[in-house]
Image (cartoon, rainbow, N blue to C red; front, side, top):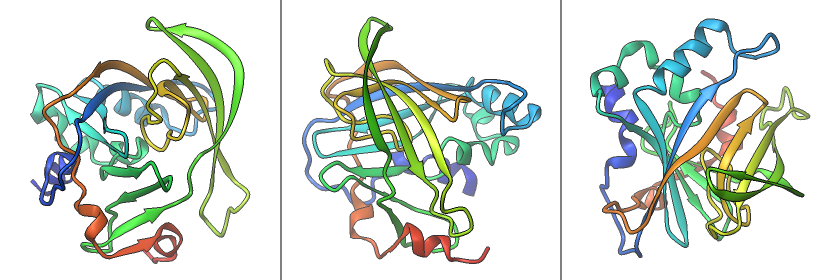
Length: 228
């Protein structure tokens, strides 16, 4: 039951401030199998199997986005014990609140109780002229880098290829793929994990939980110093 509660945190609204209309972007995900993949064959299969039972969704308005998992109809399979580590790979073990104005992320994390982690280690984007049609949307390519926060590997970066749609003027996307001049329609992390927009809904019956903004906090760098 504890695991189920963690997965569904973004559906809990313990403290909701008055807010504007909310929109919802739904993404599917999969991992490409390759000889150079950082994932084992079994873990690749596990992530792709988990995608049969779960979507990734982004709730958003003009100020915030909220990213997390949403189970499909087969809730029992979604909450299966064998998928306990899969959301970590998708940066969705805990739901993530993004503040557009400050370009920072708020999220819960293990080992710090009721505190939240403030993460300003945002993706740095290079916008390119290359374009293509994806699911009927005219999208443009961007290459992003997210720097490692680890003192042991300070020069490591995660590389992101994102395709965003300026016709959808919302600077949000799955995971930490925000702050682009359009909604992310397709993103590829490290040439192996693919996120693709499958559905876009406007004025949905959801509210974005903003209670994370009221909690005690620590920085992502302070959190990285905690010994497990």
